[in-house]
Image 1 (cartoon, rainbow, N blue to C red):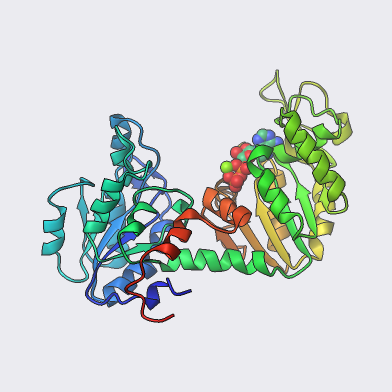
Image 2: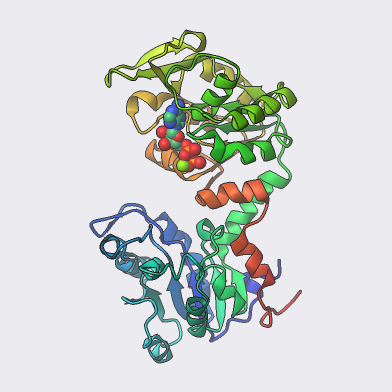
Length: 403
Ligand code: ADP
Ligand code: MG
């Protein structure tokens, strides 16, 4: 790919990088710095090339003036400084008229992080609505743009897509890694290829299910997704989370007709109750009562899924098996992780909550690849492209060295 960072002439240039520093921060304390660590390869490469380095990122959603208080990127500058071993300057304002002069004064290899780009969403959503003046302002600060925020690459924002209209652009190392890892298993998965999908709303996952079904050998279902399939099959699922839409159920019917032999549904469940918070009980799937709420898969389902997984060479997991946030309903997800951990296969986990569950339950070092792109990962797997990557391909490429 010619828009790789290594194909750009970056020597002594001013380079603006869109990073993904959308990380959990509480009272100024960073709870997980993985994404900062992932940005280091690109930053070190720019240091090696004697660049002036300007970093952009969003953090959370900023809708009001008060939101700004909890969404400053200042703690990131401090942590980045420790990791990279050089000063990281911080600019408290994003669209600051004095920035060009400040950057002029920077020395080669200096690093400057700007405040949360979404501060400019109050009041006019300049960042999120891809305001052209803001994009032009970002571009005016540098000679080259590097897109290194995979998790934001499905967003058409000023700091992701807008800026590419004005500058020679390329992707950074962390985006390249992410694309290569997802493509490796999506384009040419070694068979048997098993997809395991759980999570909450089937509507969010329908397109992904339709994309993956022709490619995979098995699709194992759990969570709210499985509930919706069971409901379509006229099982009593009590008060469980499931689709209410006739249209969706019609779709699920078609899917089940077309892919009957690939699909697997739960045999049993751990249920809660609508009237008793402390209730948690094991039930077979044909024993669910009107007040029951299916919140996890049971042991029989795990046994059946284990058999399907046993021969698999490639496995993709998205969505948790149950309401894993509550320890009484996290066993299905945890036991599934144990099965996957012991399987000699490429195991890729994608999706915000899914990767969150992997980390929370202590399995972050057990799988081949954790795709931390959240919604961007799922969109990339579904559509095969992302607006923020496409725009790099279309950006003016006067700096490209080779073909
Ligand atoms: P991702 O963000 O990785 O795409 P999802 O958001 O689809 O994953 O899935 C995780 C969420 O699904 C969790 O919040 C979990 O509590 C919820 N969930 C899983 N199973 C159930 C269930 N049976 N009923 C209600 N919520 C569920
Ligand atoms: Mg989610």
